[in-house]
Amino acid sequence: MIATSEAVVIMTHAELSAMINAAAEAAVEKARAMLPRQNVARPESVTQAEAARILGKSKPTIGRLVKAGVFRLNALGNIPMTQIDSAIAEARR
Image (cartoon, rainbow, N blue to C red; front, side, top):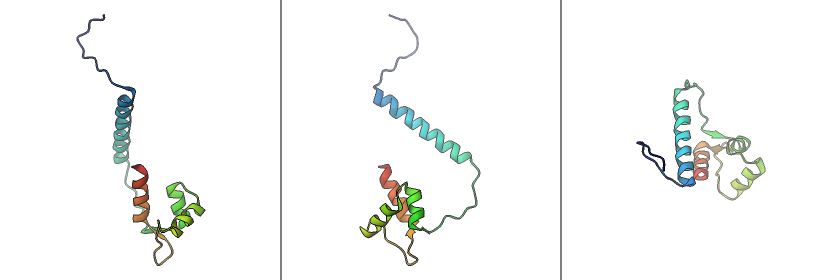
């Protein structure tokens, strides 16, 4: 047996992975906070092609989601960013 004055922590692989991921996410958020803010206006809505790029989907997939009622087009025929934000939040769950 090895004698040591320091505490030994035993954890599962899943616990270690969760701890590492949480630390990495915190580091990314801290780094983002240090970046200079860009004065680029965020659009209120985006085209179906832009929505596909943002969500990492194909344009036909976005079209099918519109037809299914998952996304509702505004008067300009665009998808409001609030719906895009909701889809991103749902994907993260």
